[in-house]
Length: 526
Image 1: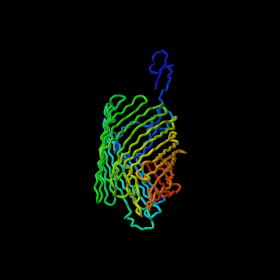
Image 2 (image 1 turned 30 degrees about the horizontal axis):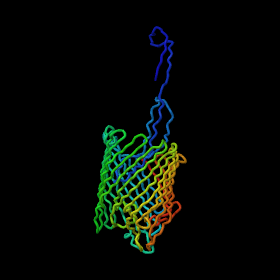
Image 3 (image 1 turned 90 degrees about the horizontal axis):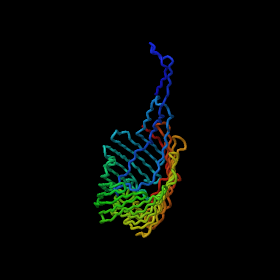
Image 4 (image 1 turned 60 degrees about the horizontal axis):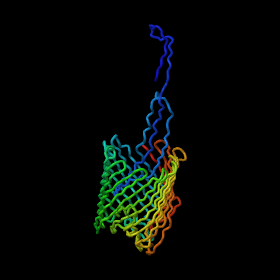
């Protein structure tokens, strides 16, 4: 408060009253906006990355939009209202047709000034109309980060149980259910260190180590230890020197086979940027199961103007084809397979851009060379499993993506991958789609209600039938969505629908999809 007094000269009175005085009060204050709560994030852990180190050389153009609701302006004398505390934990439960049971819960309230933790547990189980057509997935991911003055320490633990049944094939033949049951169990742990909090250091390092145990029925197991140690040294504002050691050491075991599946790679290189030009070059020198490899990673990007960036490059990747990697892609394969490592090489042209504040897009044209690409073939006769068929393949691909977003009110996005395979070892690249299209739409039509929809389309999938004849599977079009409405601050109701047109497509030959699946429930935040 500012006080200004203006008084006439007069003899002071005994009662200290200022006769004839005038007091003028002027109020000055700064308007203050109540801090809006941050958006609520659901704890979710990314999978461990044991491939090339990530240097983040070329970050695609991104635009994020948030809407904050502010309180009316008021004098500071009325006091500052504390921000409403966010709910750090939640539990989401539901059920529906196909005997669906659904659980999703997150615990994020265990934190302090120097550490944060997230724990995520989930379960979904379903049962279809075909005999033994059922699956169940249960898992837990725990993540923790500790901050010291210059570094971040991160630890993670992932435990998962994934259950399937080999229900494909001739369903007129009765099999004991237990003989068709397959269960994949995963235990993973990871530790890494990042010194990116040290702004005075010209050396940035991010070493990581992870270990996993992967087991299935029929006495099949796999043990893996992975390392990844990237380092960058800033020479000046335009040049960084890069180096990394990455590797993965795996042992695959069955009743009759014990096979090593290892590789180690050194990646020296540079990262250069000046004006509109950005570039990086890594010389990958790898030693794997089948010998030595030269795996360069080169990228040159030029920012044409504020709207467009054009890039060109050559990337190479060594893939181990571990039992975990292959059964994650196709859970219906044999427990025993021949272990081979693949090398994927890609030469590409990339165009990225945006128009205004809401629209962004990208297009990528690539030439591929795949050596020992794993494909999947179902055995002849009535067998319900797939074996791994390695092929040498060349391909041309076009990948396009676009998104339009208006704050958090609504957004729509689509992406498409189109492959033209040629020079194959065999007539077709078995069970790999040549067309993949995805789309999503999110809208908030009224306050507290969020509605999303999705589209997944696959085509160009070839397989062999039970008579060993080549067949093209029908195109897959899976459309669905979900809605969630906040009933009160702590409680909301949700509904989910998948495969809305009840399409009985086959992603893997002989394995018919569930069809229409509808379930719903509630989510409680606390």
